[in-house]
Amino acid sequence: MDAIEGVDLTGKTSVVTGGNSGIGVETVRALASAGSRVILTSRSVEAGEKVAQQLKADGVKGDIIVKQLDLADLQSIRRFSKAFKAEERGPDLLILNAGVMACPLSHTKDGFEMQIGTNHFGHFALTRDLLPSMKALKTPARVVAVSSRAHEMGSISLEDLHYRNRAYSAWGSYGQSKLANILVAKELAKRTEGSNVKVYTLHPGVINTPLGRHVYGESYLGSAVKLAVGILAWPWFKSPAQGAATSITAAVSPDLEAHSGVYLHDSQIKEPSKSAQDMEMAAELWAETEKQLAEAEKKLNL
Image (cartoon, rainbow, N blue to C red; front, top):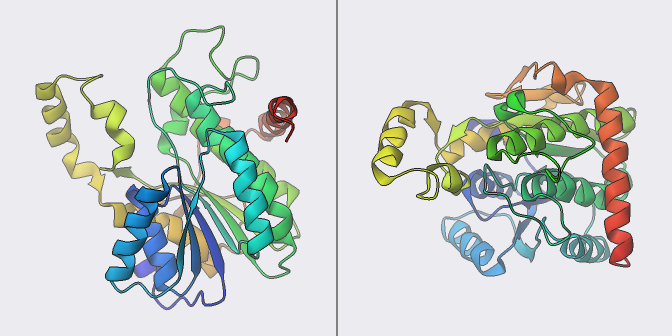
């Protein structure tokens, strides 16, 4: 992968959420190949271990440690964060890669709508928990959030983030969660201005990975339509390695050091939608997220 060529991450620690599938696997591969100690998080430790073993069999040199993390469960997030801070340093790189896309209406263990709960609330809680340790490094650290161009069709409903009082839209919910990723990243960049922590978001491209199982699965499309959609979309699909390239660029490119808060597409800085540049909404979403997390965590005595 060109994005990692010549980069030495020896002595660095990286956390990759959802590192057991899709572009997460290729992100882990690239970072570990450059010498980083990589914490691969997965809801299933077994699935994560299979990936780690295969990468090691492929000759990847960096340490790959698999840890259980379910972003749809605040207790799981807290357990992971607590253990990480007790055992590790940093991380130097926090890659918020895991996600769900266009799934039927469902809810996290804590009652959040699944897409905003996983893609936004889960990653927000994880970043909040690890940020003090990242700042304590005193050396450059980065948070990289995988968003999507689907943010362009999203809007934030602060009064009803979880579709309790409005009709559920699988794509509308996904767009809302991906818009939330960019807004929170911009607010985080603002809050960490002048520190060692830089923040980036990105659109990885249209990639043929298990993330699209709800879109192309039988629950949404018949087999004939599914095949036709796949054939028509094929010219626009990237491989997982190609999709991961933008994540790696955001994680390691020295050219981005002075541009915390930017959004990338095809490894280049791009302007996200107008809604994704609304800093007033970013601040309001941050406050609402903190409020809802505090309420949920109080119930759990976290």
